[in-house]
Image 1 (cartoon, helix red, strand yellow):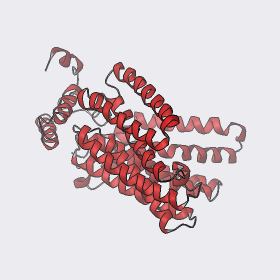
Image 2 (image 1 turned 30 degrees about the vertical axis):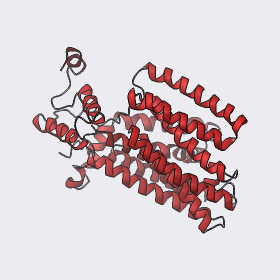
Image 3 (image 1 turned 180 degrees about the vertical axis):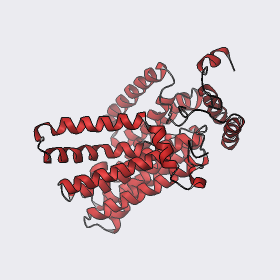
Image 4 (image 1 turned 120 degrees about the vertical axis):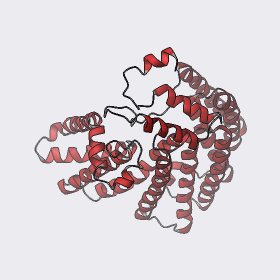
Length: 372
């Protein structure tokens, strides 16, 4: 280890994998020097040779690489300017389908430089999002102009038959292109993006099979798909409990996608049925349950998705208690204290939750503190 590395990791407990060594393993996997399974085995060997003796480790914190330096931000600004203006100018000159196809092609070409060659984190995320969204728009708008994306997905607008076909076709083509993009560039968010467009396609299939407006079915489909995405995310998480390979990044983005799909239909349906104290208490109980799941899996995304509903529920209870004029302020204060308290006591609470799970299962979870 270099002198700089030694200073960075000075004072860390024995057995705690040094931050730069973990990044080194991820880079080694990305370049094909070692496999993901070998990287996981190396991390496990390090832990076995020097077990952690402290409970104040940062190993169980979710670390996702968004920015590797200010150059990432600088390049991202340039990408947004180039891709945005190209789309606007091409749309007026060539029409929406051709303009979207051009932006998708340009996004792929730029990814050859900034994703494949330079491995820049934030630009890679922007280029992937631009590629998939542009591909979706190109296919969908070529088939039908009736493609109002989220308004159709959420059921606020009833699409025509051509719009439904466009939605399904665009989702299928975008999903295939996302798979090709991941095979070429290995950007972790790509898997979640591909799954997201397939979710949009699933809503299109629902519209095709059951054209009548049925909000309950839409909520059920969203929650079911969310659980499926969550299961896929957990599969990646359980295969890399040390979180040293690309699989942990794949899991993070999948959890980020699964969370709103699960939380919003369930809590939204409950709050739409009424806004009294009983409903608010039920919502808060569900949010606490989500907190337990977040602690067990060491993933905060599903809890974050429920905070909006928790804030509304707290506002209802505070108003009922006679503080209607200050309901918003007090609810935000309580919510903030809850988040900060959870953050401070995260490891102790995780240990409490894991100790109540079957030991064989708890030991397979990411960073199973207190379960070893």
